[in-house]
Image 1: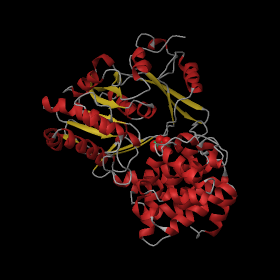
Image 2: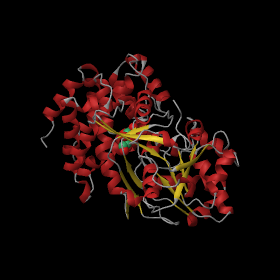
Image 3: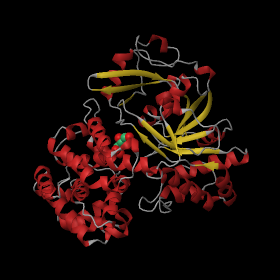
Image 4: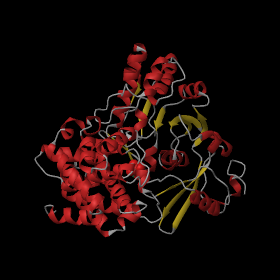
Length: 496
Ligand code: CS2
């Protein structure tokens, strides 16, 4: 089978949507760092829509800071790739052309820095996962203890962390007097503030002149991004081949729903993503809060409780009536009280939409994938609503069971608790250490875990009541099973 690229594109099966504009007439005005599945299925498609509508002429260059190699994946395809939107039996294929050029910074760091310093680039977006920002989740400050940060501070070029790499790019842009807008598209509340913080703190330590230039010449709008895009599987590549008739290493599979809310803070001509439905607003925070405390919170609670129940994907989880009613109840009875008011995202309809999206049987989003890096996700999804409720004197038995689910999930990755699976998170050395110390005792494990202030923050880490209740939940989940624990908690919890 021929591989997708500019030359073979005309051979794609009839009915496959393809770039409805002349790619050669676009210019590279955007860059993206971290060209993973989510970017290809989200921001790159908004750019595609703006190009196709003739509203913008800016295509992008994509750079990966670490593996997988984006050059191997997309350079032989001239940047083209297929995105499949799937819903039940339906699949809609579109070949996207908005990524014109790709580079691996790991292979040629200097080339990547020069490319992003090009004065024609107005906006740099990025998806580097929560941990890519090298910040302390509980405070948002740059984590000076991260080895990649201390390594990068010793260098004057070829830096590899996101803050270090961006400092290299911005130093070149400063020399060329080329202001720029940097947009984080990761699921971190106040992602623009976090990005500003890590970049400015790094620059302050590396080069004070650069730090001063950044203050006046770089904007960091916050964003809320949404579309469920699981990691691409080999079955997805086969399915795309069957539909398009071309081999494609860059396939992405997502759900039809998408949303993008961007703080209106640009110092260069604003991208025309609005023609594709993106919203530019004064304050993104309320949108972020609702998305993270409803959609992402359900995903996180369900991934742990689902894995503990022996289920594989979010869709399997929401097909379990007890798990689904737990998620619904957790949001309505607890998180809802600490949600901001956004007229277009009222909690009832938004939760219904969320649960129906999570139940899309064509989206195979594995519980273990969502469980990955829980220490970077739990705060904004579960702990912060729980803290907000505590501050108002409200109890949160269901959110606490979700925390217990996380603890039980991590415990079960350890030999002392059966080593049922491998958990992936930067805190795993700590988890292994406390699992050994507690030698199979759930209570001791939970207490040592929650006492870690870097994860739980000062308040919860010292809250004896919270520790006791979470221990009860974790123990019940491990010893009595998920079904009994959830049924018991819901029976005892105050009605909605
Ligand atoms: C998921 C998100 O893996 C995860 O952490 O919860 O990637 C989620 O699918 C997206 O935020 C949806 O927009």
